Image (cartoon, rainbow, N blue to C red; front, side):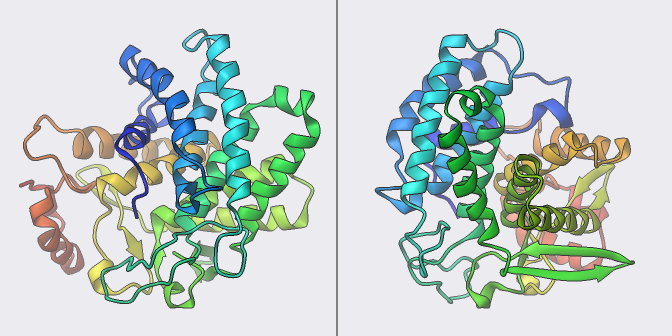
Length: 345
């Protein structure tokens, strides 16, 4: 599901998490300059209050803003950071203003048009709430709120009300969650949407966005029973994703969807959605949840599979497979023959 303009896609790519997964790779002057030029422009370009389909784009804006504010040293000037904080307050207010434009009133975010998410000729109606839109909005908002301690001190009422609002975007999804148990571990995932037809589809990238937000919410509001439960659901989603990883040529690889999905959906994750997955991976690296061996495999996913030395045939998915081999690699994966997956078109 894509709701991004060309400019905001550029910001999306800037979120590839160098700092925990590949710490030797640092953002250069070009990336810093792009963010400094883009953030003020994009803050004016999206408004969820006017168009509810802008929620994910504004959530991404806030996520980038939180990274700017957490960047140590003088990479970004104090004046720019102050501007980002004020713009971020406006972005959050825009999101709050558009949180009820879904069937049933939310608070959640979705699309204003019918959407056939999986190409199976079944459409969710306009106003369906999606974990992608809601999760990215909540992730960005709560990341931003964690990064702006000075707002908490200077405008405590605004800060607290914003945390409550963004927290509700997470808690809305509690009923739309599947629990299971494997090997004595509790696992779980959030559904793709709040439509019961999507209940059995464990799409990793959308569920993982809610999980990041739920963990941030637990950190910001640690004494609430509801936020503690949301955090436990996030932990179960972490374990679910971890159990669905497999190794290819020393790199971590995973599917777009698992558990209950139509076999046609059991395909290796594409590079575009993996940006979301890597945000989740980075978040749990900051929680020190991954082993060093797992982090090495994630680095190899980036350096050996996604980033290649060719420009005319970039990989379409995280196994380094070109776009013309998607059907072939899906069949190969399901047959258990992994060695040929490293071939690229």
